[in-house]
Length: 243
Ligand code: ADP
Ligand code: MG
Picture 1 (spheres, protein in one colour):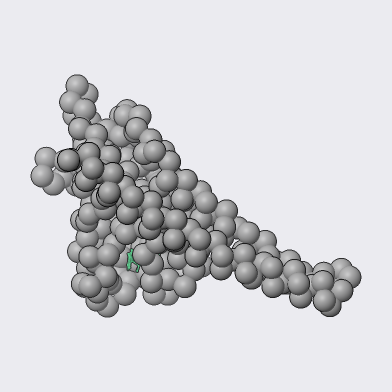
Picture 2 (cartoon, rainbow, N blue to C red):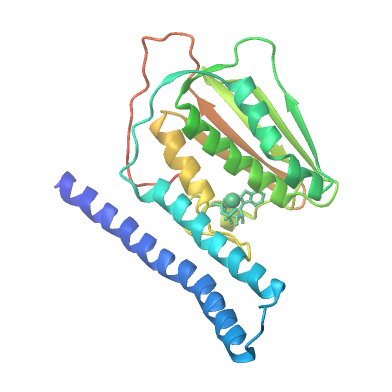
């Protein structure tokens, strides 16, 4: 009975994914096709650089989508647990985000304690989580906005908060966060948070959100701290996405 329930839940996820993927890939494909047809009609020699740029950007969109989708659609990869220096990981990510921050004249403040920043998790998966959360935060803030990342403790776990002073998330949208393909952005994939949720869940952690419209949003990620190596968190791969 339980197995049947699980099978049905998985089916729903797979159906959602399939429908979403079809839609998301068709949009850039339509525009690629349109521009190639246009170039053929005009018989431009050489083709206009701005047309080629659009085609390359649209192919890039499909490429991104497939990478994010692969993360989600693959049988969830068991995290390879090790001690992870979260200070270093967050600083590496901040470095990656420099371009986007600069474009927005936004400020990133990382508040790190001097001790106790060692989590227990899969480095590359945790990187993915914080890249996605920071990307969303930078996308949400206005020009000259501010993002603050901090590490602390909560409920006996390591708590990493990503706070922004962006547009905030209305209550009715908070309930939908983490649903694959749910996005309010014109060029969003709606996959970032669902990837975050499944990674954090498989780490035995938790993600929570608090947000106030036009004030900003704080995502809190709870992760097992590496105080005691011998205690591995229970790994649970359920096809649910809860906040
Ligand atoms: P995407 O960024 O491609 O839209 P995500 O899964 O990363 O997909 O996010 C889903 C949606 O959640 C976003 O479209 C946005 O509406 C909302 N969201 C996520 N993070 C924030 C944030 N920091 N501030 C405001 N809205 C957010
Ligand atoms: Mg995103």
